[in-house]
Image (cartoon, rainbow, N blue to C red; front, side):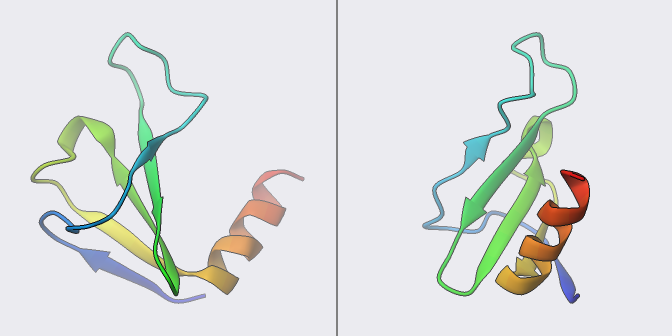
Length: 68
């Protein structure tokens, strides 16, 4: 799995908040999908915080293990 840390805002991405994230400002994860990768960030630092860019195969492997 290759993971690349991104800084700043990834322009042009449509971010989705995790359905497990509450509305009380607690732990929140957002995900965006681009052509060849999946982007993950902390919604509390969305505008200026880091984000991870993960290849689609790596993301699929992560999701299959996380759901097990």
